[in-house]
Image 1 (cartoon, rainbow, N blue to C red):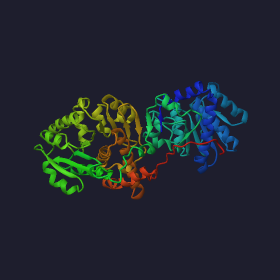
Image 2: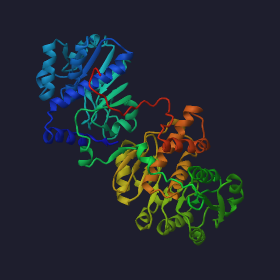
Image 3: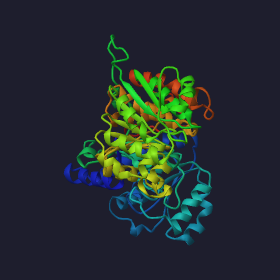
Image 4: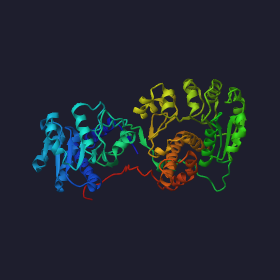
Length: 538
């Protein structure tokens, strides 16, 4: 499913009006009618009573005026609070505002802070609010009067229904622009916006429903929209199927380089996750002194001790042994618990350049790349990098806060510049492809904030590549399954307190759900709908 930016949405609106001959007023009518239906199904159903619509003077306000008309026709006491004067409302919004006057719907002009102060007592008597202040085009910080109004509405502790997007939310990044409405539900038009899915926007959106307003769906591809929500249906077709006569030689052999003193668990988790994902064989390459420990920690995977430094981490002299071990392997995973010794760094750099098979690199492998980023341009094979925000900051040279403010932008820029598949981990994980296409994941929950989860994801993606899946598809599928397995644990066991090993054990069930077309068990608080509504009254 496409996720669009403000600019992309504006271009599709224009194309619909100019190329398909659908008037803007018809689009506004469809938007207001569909949003009203969703409002009645959700916020108003649970909180009946007087409805206050706080509206700006643009098209977002115009959508709110249409909603006011439909609510008034249903006998619901509705008051519009216009944060402007009537004369400044133009175009289709002005036409719909005039209809309210004809119908006798109360419209209160609040052009400035003084007018707002004089009407606070009336505003406090509203049972629910509809936010039609600011639309998707917001990019600057919300200050002054509008911020005062937004803060006032949030303090009323009344349910708020947002029109298209919560006012104050950046539709391209999910960032709060100074102040933002906390919505219980949002009706968005045509397509979901990137900011609805990226945090903190996701928590400010509430229930989300996409309202079909007449924009032809193919326009998203035509204008070159490059953001998508990961679709389970598409992933299902990517997972390799096994014949009745399949054996472990058919399902691939994975090479993992991981582990150092104190971090043997990272190596074991990576290997176990790959096996649970279906890799036929796994060889775990570790520092020689750790081999007795890892042999007792992993049962199904094979271990091989490799030359190490005096500090007990993999040494550059292990290069020839590893190249020899790579014969017959389909994937190389590196990084979990590996350490950042300079000799290990030189080894990782050489292996990135020479690996004949796709690579999945995480954790210390990423930190070592950050010291020699040019190595990525000298590689022979596809690579998937799986940084968390801190690692992404080291890779890109940007502050972690800047990464988090625009996760899609930073992930895309790095993936395009270095021609890699980049998985930027965290809530609403982002997967950026070398061509700039970005996928956003909706599975997963806060219980995953625990040690070892990243090691599981590394093994999961590498296990899929080992079975023959293309690197980009494996990254998407691995991220989705990782979150889906964790959602199962949150639903079955507890929202917090399950372990990385629990997620590993649940991977087969999550894969079975995906293959059979069933939905994974969601984290209980997830309430995104991503569906369409028909005309009001149906």
